[in-house]
Image (cartoon, rainbow, N blue to C red; front, side):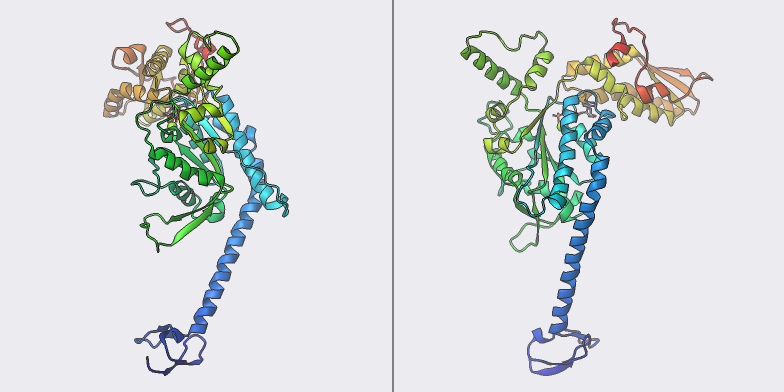
Length: 460
Ligand SMILES: Nc1ncnc2c1ncn2[C@@H]1O[C@H](COP(=O)(O)OP(=O)(O)OP(=O)(O)O)[C@@H](O)[C@H]1O
Ligand SMILES: [Mg+2]
C-alpha cells in the first residue's frame, strides 16, 4: 500500500497509512475509518467491561448464597422430595445433606476462607439401587428445587476421546448451558451422571455384555473431571477442530452425583460377606432371609468401595465418590402408594385428564392392588406402573370424549387382570369430579380389600 494520509473518523487525527494495520478499518463507500490506536482503546474498554461484568456476576452469586442456604436446609429439601418420592428415606436424607453442604462450601469459599489454604473437600455421591426405584426421578426433582445449575448426562453415551460419540466434556458443557452460559454459576453447579454402571470395566465381576474395554478410558476421562481440572469444550453446534474457540470451566467446585442400577452388585456383596464369615469360621449363608427382595435390600445397604471395584469401577474414581447412597427395591405396598400419593402420581394425572372431559375417575382398591401386583411381576420397580395403567385407560380415553355428559368411570380389578372394560356411570349430583381424597392424601379407605389386606395399614 502506498503511503497515504487518512483522517480517523473516531478520534479525528490525521494518520499516515503505510500498511493496513495503521488504519484497520477503511470503508471505501462511506469513507468511514478507524485507526489502530482507536481500535486498541476500544479493545481495552471492552475487556474492562467484561471483567467488571464477571466480577459483578460473581458478587451477585456469592451474595445470593445466604438466601439459598436459608431456603435449602436439609429438612426443607427432604420435605420437598417426600412430596414426590415414596420410601427411600435414607437416600433422600443423604441427597438433601449433600446439596446443602454444597451451598455451604461455596459460601466458605467466597467469604470465610480469607486466603487461608484450608479447603472444605466436596463430597461427591454415588447412588446405587435397582431399576425403577426412583434414582433418576429423585435427582430430577432435586434439580427443579435447587437454584444452582444442575445437568443430567447419561454416562453410557460417553466415549473415550477419539471414539465416535460424546466426550466426557459433554457433561460439563451440559451444565454450562443449564447455567445460562455463566461460567461462575457453571463452576458451582451439580452434574448428575446417570447410568454410571454402564461404564464399568468388562473385567469387573458384573456380567454385562454391553460393557466394553473402552469404558476404562471413559472412566479415566471422568476421573480428571472429578479430581478438579480445567475442562475445555467447544460451544454447542460447533465442530471440534484445533482452531475452534473453546470455553474453559474449572470443575474443582462442581458437585458430582453418579447413579446406576449396578445389576448384580448384591451378589458381589454376598460373596464378600460369605468369605469374611468363612474366614472367621462361620459357615452361614448370608443373609438368611427367605424373600429375594428382603435379601437384596439387606445386601444393597452394605455395598462398600471394594464391591464397586469388583464391579469394574476403577479405584481412583471410587476414591472420589466418598458417599455411597443406596436405594431399596420397592415392595407392593410402596408401589400402591406411588400410584396415588405423590404430587404427580399416575392416578392423579389421569384423574385430572378425565376431569377436563367432565368425567370422574375412580380406581377401586382391588384394582390398585392388582396394578401393584402386576408391576411386581414385571420386576421393573415403579417403572411399569404407568404403562399398566395406560393400557387400561386407552379405551376409556378413546370413548369418553364422544360425549360431554358428566360421567363417572370406575376401574375394577377385572379391568386390570382380565382386560374388562372400565364401567361408565352417569355422575350423581352430589359427586365431585376431582376427589380431594385421592389428590391430596392418596386412597384414604379403611376398607379391607378382597386380598384381606387393610389398605390404610399398608399406606402408613
Ligand atoms: N420411590 C418412588 N416414589 C415415587 N415414584 C417413583 C419411585 N421410584 C420410581 N418412581 C417412578 O417410576 C418411574 C421410574 O423411576 P426412575 O426413572 O427414577 O428409575 P431409576 O431408579 O432411575 O431406574 P433405572 O436404573 O432403570 O434408570 C418414574 O416415573 C418415577 O416417577
Ligand atoms: Mg434411571
